Image (cartoon, rainbow, N blue to C red):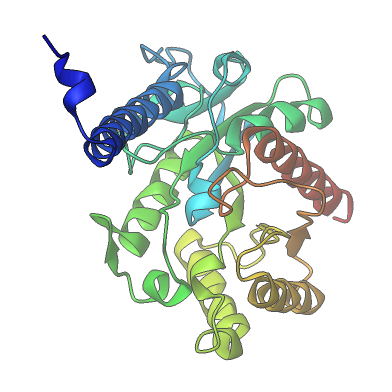
Length: 291
């Protein structure tokens, strides 16, 4: 009796093989996506540790993280990023003080990852007196434009300037507002927004300082990444940022040269985001030296 497989025509066998290959590809793609999502959250903290000590406001420096996704954090959190310091704190969604572990941001749970906050704090500890503490308050939301911040627009369920104002209130409650770390510009890196970007940013920073009631509040910006896509327009944004630092002694710019991106070609990878945090700390220290 003739075998059924051998009775199939070559064309039918090829079609069957293609179907099997397609099914395997779909299964592999789904599995990879699942593994990637799992890897993103593998080292996320399993618990929050509340801060029970009484902070001395004059010895507690508070920083606000603001901007879009490269400040909100998209890097892969690793074990090193969850090692706490007894001198570095952040807040949870309820505004309560907790020991800082990455990720610090909580507004976009399906996207959030490693930001530069904890790296910044640990580096800054090296240059401040031993009794001083640091509080890092997250307020960055991915995909935002400067004018959305100015207009207090709601983006991804967060009313930008209103949320920022609330975080300034918390900053003053917990300590001395020492500065704003800002990273933004990718969403404005287009022909329509670049011509007014610097003017808009000056207007926004003025709003920030008015809300904080601190006309000389240090603001430290970060360059956009030196990688494609849209590198030409990113460079134009970086040039606007450089010009802005010339006009204001209390605005500083951190270089992103040498930093690398993740596979999405949009966000700094984990190693680079840690380096960026250290550069923000160095920039803040330099600003304080000029006082």
